[in-house]
Image (cartoon, rainbow, N blue to C red):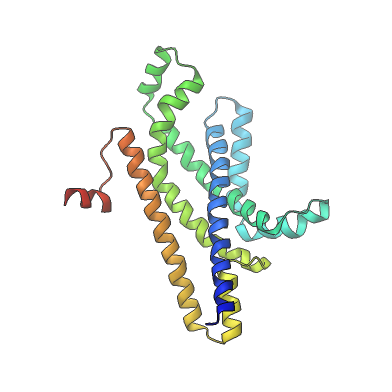
Length: 227
C-alpha cells in the first residue's frame, strides 16, 4: 500500500476515534439528563425524558444522520458534517444509555436513601454522596456494551462522505482493486479498537468498585491478582 493510501487510513482511524470518543461523551450527558429525569418526582420532567428516550431509541442512527445533514439545512440550520455525525450517534446511544442510568439509580437500596433523609441530607447531597457512587459501578458494564455499539455505528457516517475508517477502506479498495484483504483488515481494525475500549471500561469498573470498597468483579484482572 502506498504512503498516500496509508495516510487516508490513519486519517480515517482518527475520525473514527473522534466520533467514538466525542459521541460517547455527549451521549453520556444525554443519558444522565434523561435517566435522572425519568427518576424525577416531577411529572413534566419525567414526561420530557420519556419522550426523548422513546423517540430516539426508535430512530435508526442512519435516518437521524440524514435528517441532520440533509433536512435540517432546509430550515436554515447548517451543521458541520462531522459534528452532525457526532450528534446523531450521541442522541441515539444516549437514549439507550438513559435506561441504564435509570435502572442503576433505582437499584440503590431504599434503606440507604431513608438513612440519608434521616441525616438531613438535601436531595442533591443524597444523589451525589449516596446514589451516584453506587449507581455508577452498576452502570459501567452496560455502558461498555453501549460504547461498542457506538463504535460499530460510526461506520454509518461513511455514507455521507465523512472520511472515517470505513470510508478510507473504501478508497483503498477502489484504488487497489483488493476487496478481501481490505475488508478483513477493516474487521481486524474495528475488533482491536473494541478490545481497547473494553479493556479501558473494565479498568474503570475495577477502580470504581475498589473506591466503594466492594469486591473487584471476577475476570481478567481478578485472575491476575490471584495468580
